[in-house]
Image (cartoon, rainbow, N blue to C red; front, side, top):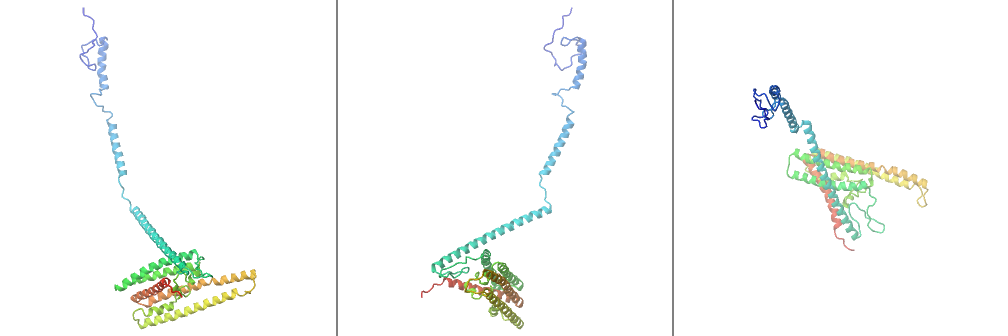
Length: 381
C-alpha cells in the first residue's frame, strides 16, 4: 500500500515553471485538476508575459508617437525662440525713432544752453543795476533814466512779450557774431565764390530772423520797438522808427567795399535815392500821425476838469489813430529788409560778404561805445 502524498513545501522548481506531465497531484489537488491547470497555465503564461523577462511590445507605438510629438514641440519652441529678421518697414520705423530721440536730445541740450546764457545775462544786468544805483544814475540797454526826483527808475511797465524779445534779441546777437566771424574767416581764406556764397546766404537768412522777431513784438508792444529800449544808448542816437536808416547804411558801406563798376554805382545810387524817398514819406506820415494825436487829445479844454463822456470819446479816437503806429514800424522794417537784399543783388558775392561784415562791425562798435561810456569814470564838477 502506497503512503498518502505529502505537501511539497519546498518545491524543487519555481512556482511559475510548468510541472512535469506525469505528476498527478499538485498542492493537494486531484490529478485531473492539476493536469487541467497545467494545460491552462501555459496559456495564461502566454497571455500574461513576465514583466521581469520580456519588454512589452504593445505600448511602443504610442511612445514613438509621443517622441515625435516631443520633437515637433521642441522644433516649434525653437522656432519661436529663434530671432526673427525684422522687415524693412520695422527697420525704418526704428531708425526714425532713433533719429527723433537724437533730435530731442539736441533740442534739450540747446534749450539748457539758452537758459544758462539767459541766466548769465540776467546776472550781468543785475550787477549793472546795482552799480548804477550806487552811482545815482541808471544805465543799461533795458532801463530808463528817469524819476521826477532824479532817482533811478526801471521799466516796470515792460510787457512779458517785450522782455522775451529782449532775451531772444540778445541770443540773436550772440549767434550773429559767430556767423559774421565765420564769414570774415571765409573772406580771409579766399574761398571759391560758390563756397563763399553759402556763408553770405546764411548771414542774410539770419537777418531775416530778427525781422520776424520784430514783427511779432510790434503787434503787442510797438512802443518797445519805436523807443529802442532793446538797443544800447549809442545805437538809440541813430534810431529811426524802430531801427536804422537804410540810406545812412548805404553811405557807410560804400567806402568799405571793393571798387565798383559803373553799372554797380548807378544801381546803388538809384537804390539810395529810392530809399531816401521812402524814408521821407514814412517820416512825413509819422509826423502827421503825431500832429493828429495832439489835436485829438487837445480838442477839449485842458485847464478845467474834462467832461467824462467827451474825454472817453477822445481817448477812443486817439487809440484808433495810435494803432497805425504798428503799420509805420512794419513798413520801416520792410524798407530795411529790402535794402539789404537789394544790395546783395547789386554786388558780387565777395563784395556782398564785405558789405555784411562792414554792417555788423558798424553796429558792434556802437555797442562797444555804449559799454565804454557806461563804465568810464565820471569827473566831479
